[in-house]
Amino acid sequence: MTSETTVQEAHAGEAKPTRRAELFAFLTLAVLIWPILAVGIVGGFGFLIWMSQIVLGPPGPPR
Image 1: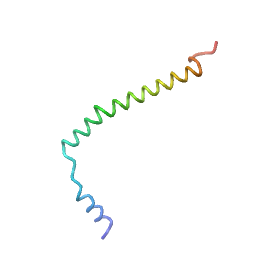
Image 2: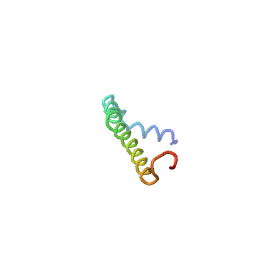
Image 3: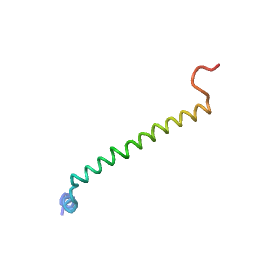
Image 4: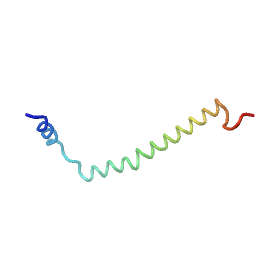
């Protein structure tokens, strides 16, 4: 028994994803996960800038 037949046997029991399952996965990513992740990243970056300005002062040349 070679490793190639073992891999083929392992994949033989797996069902191929249906069109409906793939559409559901795509919509979940496109509508829920990526927008939430984008808002979180942009909001986190804005919060980081805000906190750095509280500690270090506003940007620009020193007075």
